[in-house]
Figure 1: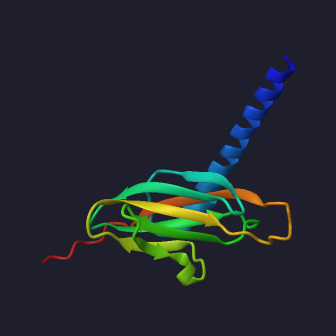
Figure 2: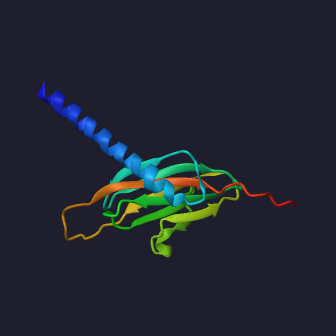
Figure 3: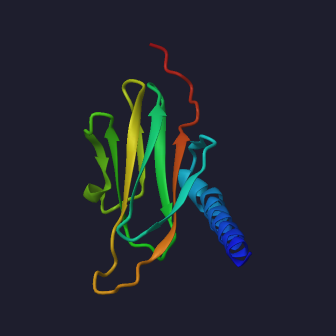
Length: 148
């Protein structure tokens, strides 16, 4: 009986943490999109130092996008890259002092991979820092189409 109670408590705790992280994405992550229109999806998870994650998303041609990464302040920098399905690097934020926002347009509709790697603060410390990280996607608002 105690095992069941502990299991129920742990599952409730996990749901609470994920709920808080989703709230972070809605409050902080969405704000990072600025004037771009949110695509309606909230992508957030708990990551710790040294941990990696990948997200796959389809992007459509002739549309300008913004990808915005947000993290809790306690986490160190996040290295993020955008790759095509062949592994070609389209963007690497190492070249831009770990900036967490990138605006882009694809020439053809394709699936891209967003890679995240939470860097490590201090390898001397055995205690790892963990926290919420969100990845949000926005679409540039429609502007008057140029006549060709």
